[in-house]
Amino acid sequence: MSLIVGIDDFGKIIEKKLGFIDKSLFIKEIFDNEQIDVPVIVRPRRFGKTLNLSMLRYFLAAEVNGLKTQGMFDNLNIAAQGDDYMQHQGKYPVIFISFKNVKGADFDEAYGELSKLMSKTYSQHYTLLTSDALHPHEKKIFESILNQTASRENLLSSLADLSEYLYRHHAIKPWLLIDEYDTPIQTGYLKDYYPDMIAIMRGLLGAALKGNESIHRGVVTGILRIAKENLFSGLNNVKVYSVLDAQYAECFGFTEAEVDKALKENNLAHLSVDIKAWYNGYHIGKSQIYNPWSIANCIDEKGTLGPYWIHTSDNVLIKQTMARADAALKIQFEAILEGKPVETLVDENITFADLNGSGDKLWTLLLFAGYLTSTRTEMAGLEHQCLLSPPNKEVALLYPHIITAWFADSMTDTVYQSLLKDLTEGNLDYFLDTLKTFLFQSASYFDATEKQPEKFYHGFVLGLIISLPKTHIIHSNKESGRGRYDVLLIPKDKTKLGIILEFKATRPGSDLQASAEEALTQINQEGYAAELKQQGIHKILKVGLAFRGKEVMMASEPI
Image (cartoon, rainbow, N blue to C red):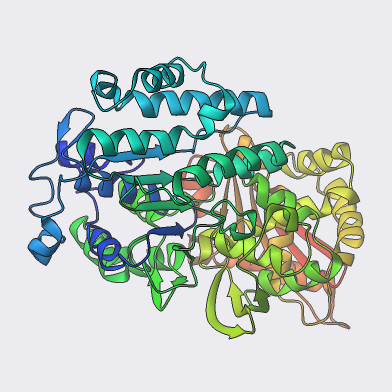
């Protein structure tokens, strides 16, 4: 059975008997870690945070959105752990809130979205309006939250007030489950209303979690660890668990055993090696974790490999921060492009104000957001000394985008668009002239030495053509004919030109043109045009590119 894709409501999955990986031992870890009142768990996007929190909600509550929860967990791993855990099933009131949609273009719009979110949250507990546990003036405040007319003061205390109302009504302290707590803060940072938004979130979450005797426990999830923001100031019993911590390591994402089982059940075990190379590589604690979103999509697409995860976001924060990277960091990124790890300090306690494009803050952002992983982590004073590298092939595809952002100042948009047009229309003399200029100007960011591997130039060219997917499908390092080509441009309009690009890196003193001819010969000998022909592309252009430092030569042959 295919794994579910895009459904993060646990109740729907159970009710419709959809395929999923059983992560119910997350519930066990939450209860086993009861000495921590509020665990804050940060993981990359699309790593199952919302689904896990939804699962915890269904476990704790007797009913969610009219759906009875009794029996939902009887056949899951948590049930096998016995009554010590199952005795809690369906026994608590629960407040569940996700901030994932608070992304206003300005502060007023974001504030309105927040007001709407609290109205929706209160409506889930609408029966409190008929409860004798609430005083008349509290019911008026409750109605103002529902009607989105509450004062700022009442909005900021709304989570804390709701927990108190539930405690009084049920005589049982509710759990408070908060998903994507950092989304409004990140959006405020990107859209220039950060101070106002951080003040709102500090007030809302601080009131709900700081010294709130009306909640049993809280669980918070997000992407970034933002400890210095003092969102939880004064709350001593909160602990943040990041990708560097062993606690909850196997609760988010898929383990190798889980991936093997899913591939076998979907008759894809024969593709295991390629699938694992594309989507594995996350080292969380001491566990190796696979990207769950990509694995689920790959299985749903019958084993077709593709950049499923990196296309789920516009990566604005990453691109904006990387664009401000200083020269030293750009040189370090040469190692990333070559497939080599970078050793650096990681400061877990970052703030958005720290994201200035230099130092360990940038590496920390890339690590927490899932664009790098740490294969070796050691304590160095108050920080972590980490060996960082892209986790897998899928994520490595993103870095050419970063190169394009860095190179933007070296070429006007008009010249850049002309370069793409000349390539896709086969005007190779013009394309080569522009490429030479672009390479000379842009490669100054890097140490383009005689040891520069083909992978760097491969990434360089991918970075240049990365905006072509509107008109072309870009394949990189895939099998065709008798080997693996470097880059294939497949036009979506099959009457247009299909293009094969093969790269060679040469040493000083070598014949650059001869190396370009060698790349062209390889295209022919290995039959790289086979994939284009199979797709009905009859106009095919073969291009061999040879690089040496900042020099480039080309050999070509049309069909």
